[in-house]
Image 1 (tube, rainbow, N blue to C red):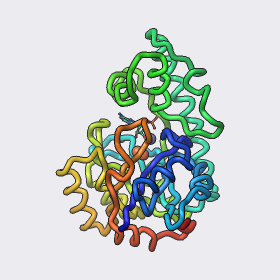
Image 2 (image 1 turned 180 degrees about the vertical axis):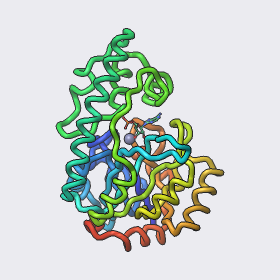
Image 3 (image 1 turned 120 degrees about the vertical axis):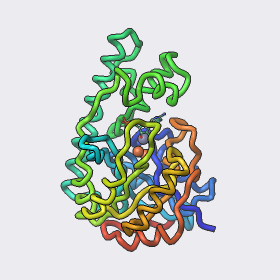
Length: 287
Ligand code: AMP
Ligand code: ZN
Ligand code: FE
Ligand code: FE
């Protein structure tokens, strides 16, 4: 039996398990192919690789923070998954470093806004325990709000204070998605549009944007994602068929920063094959 989960996070970004623990969690859940896709970093790749159990396959990847045309004349923040790209490709190294710094500065601004309104958070409590090199994200601020007794969960922190339309939300300067698609391809990787229709997070793209990105080299679309409705999954599956894009399914596991278990959504073996066939940056690894 194969069980393929192509979108997960570790403590190297905003998950709650170390790369080693994440691989163990995946093995215990019967995952046979796991992709590690931390936000804007490849920092967990070596640790996940070293922890692979016999027979388990690791697809090394990352989730790129991007800004996309929304298809209505505006823009919207989106995520692009990149698989099996060369982690030393200079454009990717530089852009990921820039984004990690951008994320830190943006979180400090969000903390300042919350503090101004009397919430007991300061940059020290948010960043104090983060290991060097961690990609900071709003879930880390959510954890600080839990420690301060303001909310009981990261979900509650997002619902009340950290969501995209909150007065405390601060934008970050993300990579234009068409640039990211080309960058991942140039590095031998395969770009897959993540949770394109996750409406509960805020505004989403018109699906015409996916057709435009397919011309730029987009390789796939994440169809089965916990934040996608059945109708939106059907729409994306149909469009992917028309555009010749691979369709994936993944949990977007974040440990205890979200309630979704690993393997909650999975990718079909032939879809994985199609992705691997397009990749030339680094190899999938087998334990
Ligand atoms: P950021 O990367 O700082 O913009 O924060 C967004 C990240 O928080 C995404 O990776 C989400 O997957 C994660 N996240 C965790 N819980 C939630 C939630 N309840 N709503 C939205 N995003 C969430
Ligand atoms: Zn995340
Ligand atoms: Fe995402
Ligand atoms: Fe994610």
